[in-house]
Image (cartoon, rainbow, N blue to C red):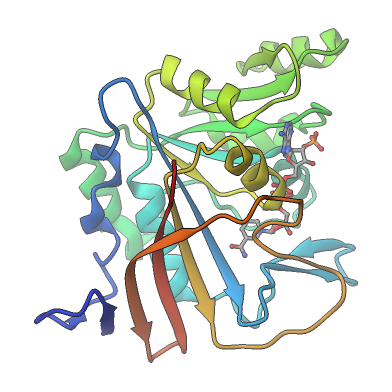
Length: 268
Ligand SMILES: NC(=O)c1ccc[n+]([C@@H]2O[C@H](COP(=O)([O-])OP(=O)(O)OC[C@H]3O[C@@H](n4cnc5c(N)ncnc54)[C@H](OP(=O)(O)O)[C@@H]3O)[C@@H](O)[C@H]2O)c1
């Protein structure tokens, strides 16, 4: 069970399963808008990823990743029309260095989320948007996405050959005139008809959206572990004018020693 610490009310306890599904994030966007939400798990000292010498890559530390947080990750994915991720993720996936984050509800444990999507009239799986300037996206890593629409958002450069390869593989490449900004991402998502977008990338994509005030909510799991380490990522690594956040919900998960928090980005 989870203990609800904020807002304080009569039903102070709730089951983990269903805790995030009840937010109905797919129905939050106003007409002609899209509702964009992000999700991270972090250590108490603010690390979402550490450099793993063995892998030669940054990765979510095993000391904080856990099945109860993963359940809520899946519930957030379940409410999305589209998942927003980075090319880096597909580069890691292609060499077996990334967990398969994209299918929603695969496996018996998450079958209820698949059924929930059906009942809500959502497609079996959310579509996928990949942010990339390099367009170094290994095609074999996209093979598991044949059942969805895949889009790549990139800035206009002379990359015709790479664009053609992606297009031939069934990917839609959308180019912005300048750098890919939060406004560009949001306006494209709206034009494509998406109502809810789940951002699962790291600090660069987060920054891109935040500087343009394009994010609506942040789901943050704070795991009661101090990791230390000099080579790490936090939820945001670049410069930003201090951003006030409004706490919406706070749950204590005694079983896995972590807190689940839901925030609104103010002034969105
Ligand atoms: N603990 C957690 O909850 C959590 C969540 C997410 C990620 N992570 C970890 O954080 C680390 C970094 O994740 P990440 O690499 O996905 O995150 P990222 O830093 O947000 O994204 C990096 C890549 O995305 C593309 N990109 C980002 N912003 C862009 C923009 N404005 N325009 C065009 N392309 C843009 C670039 O691709 P190109 O190089 O192709 O141009 C860039 O290399 C990973 O180790 C990951 O596992 C942890």
